[in-house]
Length: 110
Image 1: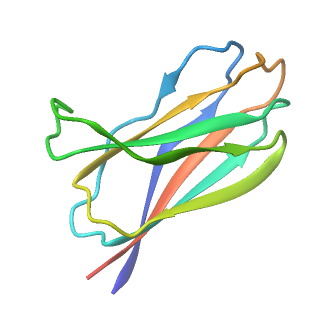
Image 2 (image 1 turned 90 degrees about the vertical axis):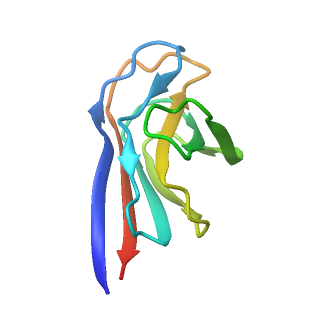
């Protein structure tokens, strides 16, 4: 087994309340995933995981419920179901004025 690491969002400076969608993460043979959120924003952020069987996301679906990460804190979520393609949609209910957001996916490959 080895560890796979993908930055889905890399130092995103959010300054509004719009939804921001991460880069596509292709899971390949990753079976257990941990989603690490480094919230350097000065406002809390809501993370909704979205998955699809197709790379073009033509049949996307929500993965679990959204979860909130407090301002200027780090947190994580997990997903042990196999989903071929994955994205995160992040939103802030109050527009941040400072900081950056990073979302990293760690997984175990065979």
